[in-house]
Length: 313
Image (cartoon, rainbow, N blue to C red; front, side, top):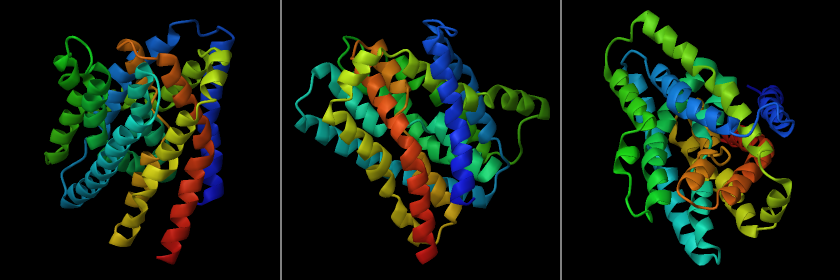
């Protein structure tokens, strides 16, 4: 897809977030609606979409694509996790904000916005590639992401770290990927119907979460240079680490999905984790808001950069 049509589709996607923002500010969606949407997404629609996306017949080509995308995902997650841990140790910030800042830099809105963007670009193939790329990411955010916030708790909830809808659905999807057939038609249709609302609901949730933030708090947090640097690392620096894979003679679609998915804004899950484990949830939400707003510029920028480099390669 050329850049102009892509930006038009992306604008429509962010318009849903704007609707969510207005609905929350006008109290049409009342206080607590963000929690309801989060529970619905994390426990129902997203797991269904993960399983549906990986329910494809086994093939060597799919396995190769899965291997490359998992490699790229693990590569960027490892480097971003190490860099974020090292960078936060250098910054003079409140203890209640350190874990949130690490999470903002490491974890993007890949399962929600990432899949939506890839669907805009490549249709069902984009969803499949994004799901492949998200395999390692989902395991990482549902394990290390929870550990990052819960590690200072008196009792670390190991059950929720390893046994939760995200991990379970990802493992089920991986098993389906290795099987020769697919799920029964009726079950596949059910998963599709449950999973597809993830795209609009996730954008609506982003808007509702932003609309729930007191403007004064947001403005005070946005004065923090740490949040701006964290957004720069998340949106541009880390995804650009994957651009050299263009020269590996891989299909361009794989590299586009990897770079753009890695360049998604910070995940709203981070503010939910922060609230659950007694961290500064408002600070985390402000970071998510900043990266989400900036991603309107950085996502098309990354896509344009990939097109330019690929034309020269």
